[in-house]
Each structure stands twice: as structure tokens, then as C-alpha cells.
Length: 364
Length: 265
Image (cartoon, rainbow over all chains, first blue to last red; front, side, top):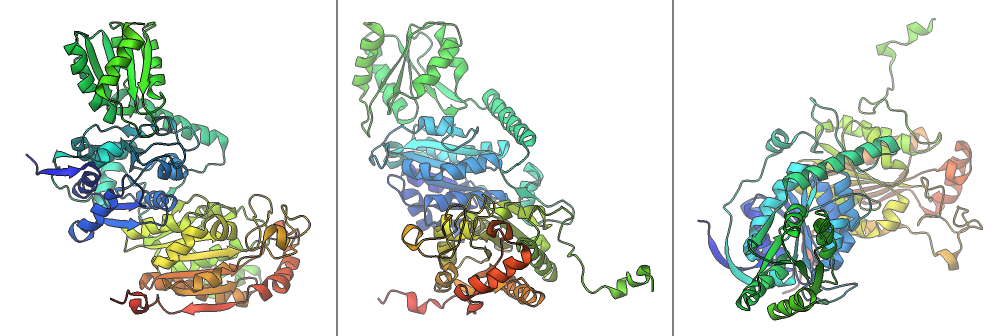
């Protein structure tokens, strides 16, 4: 059993980063995630593990520092909230294009624009469909508890290195700010350059050794035929992720006639909604995607042949509902897929969700 | 005497640096980039730091700098090279990291990154090529374009009311306490190229000695962008750029002592 603590989600991101052997964090303050960097600065990990923590002049600089450090093979990360992630979008595209591992944490707030500092899930499209320019994908993990904020830091880095691709923890102000019991991970030593090279290959720009050609980290390729072949390689990688990395959780789906589909904070609310609905005699279950990319298409397609309807519950105007519709449609099923959500920083109540389910699917 | 009698190792006075690759340079004939690439390669060779040097190339004509010097490279997004270099240098303290940037990259889109990297005193080298024009995109106005200078986006000459003043960014950089060495050089004659080489060597030595940020501006020609032949471009540079961008060191030492910057109580 690891060390038990009562901590905020944002604080746990920082603690987990130190414990998983992260080499560097580069960030810029923005509500509601500033505790990530505050906790790191307070912990002074440079004395403990040698981890570097740097407050950059902007999110633009932060993500480019991550790009540089990641290119040298180091295990590095940043965190921000929605408007800051928009500023990072260019850099994220470069990191994906140069095929570098890194971890980006988005503690979402309501948008668009400066929006609000309250929790939201309105960056689903931005995170899972692109955000920056070009055909690329992030591995997107959606924690629904403070415990998963801890667990997904290490998992995010593992997946990022496995695929040499940026990974994102997509969470929101609710989980970032709330305190819960968490079992912290044990300390892992930081990887040496030799260990990284032995495990992941010698692509990093950590000084040209006499025994290899010089390394270049770039996303640039002027020859269209070669650029297309780079793109094909990326797509192969994304296909492999879709085959091997899908993670989700099902809650009371065995006998369910109606399925709620929700991630992160919304999924926690929907657990309660399932209980409320069951108390009313409604056979309702919950499917919680843990990886938003790759999206759990198969379990949704399978359920689509058995159930009477899906309701996605999102803190946005209806974004994941498009993926649920596509997945359900894979089974040639005409099962209805409806959406319910709140926007602008409002969190739906469990009762509202049951009401929406009854109105949109059962009474309809 | 036959030519074969002359081509002998003992007669060799100047050769291609071993660190310059054999790739054919894409730069236009007359361009300063080739000369400065050579000087950088010579300095890395001199200091014997090939295995610990990492270059960061910009967006602009020198985006392909990584094709020409036999060291590890990262190619940065437009203007972000100082942030990329910061990231590399911070998690690799034993390495020597340098950026190679043009005027559009460094003094326009990347102003925030260069100011803050220099102000933090990042232990990096910055090579700044100032040719007063955007070369790669076809000769548009740069932040350092002189008033009256004709470019693709100032066809009647840079106009003060429309376009503002040319930016002396190096003078600004020299005010920042994190810098150790700030200098302006040129490389259009053998004598100035040798002087420039000395400046670049000092900058790299400073990085080895962890003295703070070293910044070397090289006032350069873009004869294609300026629509001049190489000889006339050099002349134009001497007559027009040198008075506005005077040569010489603006700071030489190490980053400022912290005393004057502390809160009082």
C-alpha cells in the first residue's frame, strides 16, 4: 500500500510527476490549475530528484521548452487550462509532428474566449480531434477522481514514450480543485540518457556521439512524397493505439436498457444518476471512456445491439455525442443517441441527468 | 611547377571544417549564412565540443541549418528557438546549446522568447543574423528594415507612419542583466569574418563557463531579397546598415551580480 494522503487533484499531478521520475516541468500560471506549479515549487524537487521546474514567460514558451527538453530525450511535462492550451496548440502540433513524448495536463475551464474559471469539458474536440494544425492525435486520458490524477501521470508518460507521441490528461476545474483520499505512487528513479536510449532508441538530441549519425528533431519535410510517408507512419501509430490502448469502465451495464456515456467529472455525477434511476426501476448503466483518444468504439458498438438508447452527459454543448453516434452506428443500429449537458462552468446534477434520460429517451 | 606539387598537406593554409557536412547549401550565392555556418562549425571544432553541442534552427532561410553542421539539432517553431534552447539547456546542464535565428524570427515573432531567455540569463548562445528582410518568404519587411528600404511589403519604401521604426533589438538585449556578452559583428570581408569568429568563440566559451546568455548579431546581406548582386549588396550594407547598426561589443563579461536586484527587506 502506497502512502495515503488527502490532496487536491492539482497537487497530486505535481506529486505524481516528482514520484514518477519526471525530469522537468515548464508552465505558466492560469486558474484553475496554478496549484500544479505552486506545489512543485514548494516541493523543491531539484534538491530531491533533480527535476527542473521553470515558470516560463507564457504558455507559448512553456510548450516550446517542453518540445526542446523532450527532444533531448527527457521526461517532461506542462500543465495549463483551456485558453493556455489554445496558445500551446502550435507547439503541440510540432511535438506530434516531430514524434516526441511528453505529458500535457489540461485542467479545463468554461469557454470560449476567456470564458470562466469554473469547470467545463468543452475542450473535448480540441483534445481528441486536433487542436493544432495538421493530421495528428494525442493520447487523451480522462481521470474522474483525484486517484486517477495520480495514476495517469505515470501512465501518460509510459504511453507517450511507447508511441513517441504527446499524451494529454484532460481533466477539469472540479477534479483539479477537489480534495480526496489518494494513494500516492512509489518513487521511480529518473531515467538516465543511457536507459532511455536502451529502452526507446537513440533518436534524442543529447549530443552527437562518435558511434552514430547526428540526430535532427524536426517536423519539417519539403519533399511531399516523404511528408506523406511520415503521415502514413503517424496514422499507423494511431491505428495501433486504437487497437491496443483503449481504456474504459462499465458500471451496471449488464442488464441495462439505457446507457449513460460520460467521462471525467460528468461520469462521477452519472454514477449517482444510475443509482437514482435504478431506485425508480429504470435499468440504466454507465459507460465511462477513460481514453478519449483512442475512443472506446467497440464496447459502444456492442451495447448498441442490445440497448434501447444512449445518453451522453457532458459539460459542453454536445461534443463526445458525435463519437458515440459514430460508434453506435458501426453496428448498423438505429438506436437513439441523445445528449444532455450544461455549459459555461455549470455542473449538472444527478437528478437533472435522470430527468433528461426520461424526457429524451424513455418518454420520447 | 605542377599543380600536384602545390596540393600537399604541408602547403595547406585553410580547409573546410570537418564539422561542415558535404550537403550542398541551399543558400543563394552571396548570402552571409554560409560564412557564419562555417564560423560556427570552426568554433565547435576548435573547442572540441561536437559531442556536447546542440543547435536550434529557426524558421526562415536557416531553417535547414541542421543539414550543414555535424551535431545534434532541433528545429524550432517560428520565433521559439530561445524557449526550445531553454528547455534543452535546463535539463542538460552539461551541454552547450545555441540558437541560430534571423531578424524576423528573433526580433518580430519571437521577441518575447528572446527577451525572457536573455533576461533569465539562460546559459545559451544566440547567433542573430540581421539582414533587414524576410528572405525565405520572398523579401518582405522585417523588424530591422530601414526607413525607405524597398521590400515586397513596402514597395514604396518602409514608411514611418505606416510601418514604424526599425528595431535595434541588440541594444535592448544588452540592457538585460542575464546577458554576459552582447556584440554586433559582420562577416563580409576576411578581416571582419575573423573578428566575427572570435566573437562566436567567446560566446561558446561563455556557455562552457556558464556565464549567462551570449548574443552575437551578425549584420548580413540578403542580395536576393535586396535585388542586388553580392558585391553591391556588401556595399549597400556598409553604406546603409552599418551607420544604423554600428559594430562592436555592447556588453562583455558575465551576467549582472544579483545585489542590485534584491528586494530591500
